[in-house]
Length: 266
Image (cartoon, rainbow, N blue to C red; front, side, top):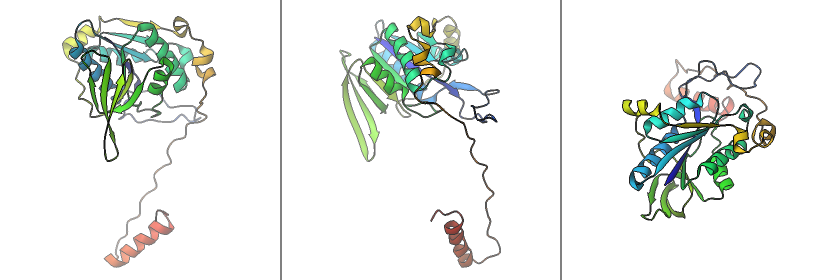
């Protein structure tokens, strides 16, 4: 089986994000970048499927981003993925979700695939659009936010479970298909020292838009249908009020008044 994992590199969730003074983006100096956490579940599920399917099954990571993205790609390779395709082109800077999906879908199509795993969303912009757009462009079924995955012995179908309000939903789909993974699906493995050493020798194919047969006008910022006009930092948090020197009943009344008249939450 040719198993594909879509991977995105994002700022570490513990990184303090600062908006540029002119609102054109974020300050990138000092930011630590990591694999988007939901994509780690996608990598793990792909590796589990490879181990189960056996034979000549392979796991290929496909990612789009600048040079630094290779660090996260190598982490996935150290976990056990076999190879990677890195879409790296300056023209992708500023691309919207559809533009990124077009580049990823073309790279996946050129590589060949039987099944695709992705995180349910990236934790940076939380759009949750790219996996669905990739599936649409490849004209294959897609099931997002899966919490359980099973494949039939003949590898022609998959049965997945999704947590929904008040219960669980079970879906059967034919393959090839794309699956968006979430927390609880599995427990991602750590990259071992031998895995890290092996990852240095595993192939990472770098392609640009021209190599994919795509034009920057339809994939990059120029072709984006969604544009970020301005980044605005969160407002400074105001100091709280402490009610002191009051009886409980009196303090309760004052608290309710403040919540109603000042905070306007009741």
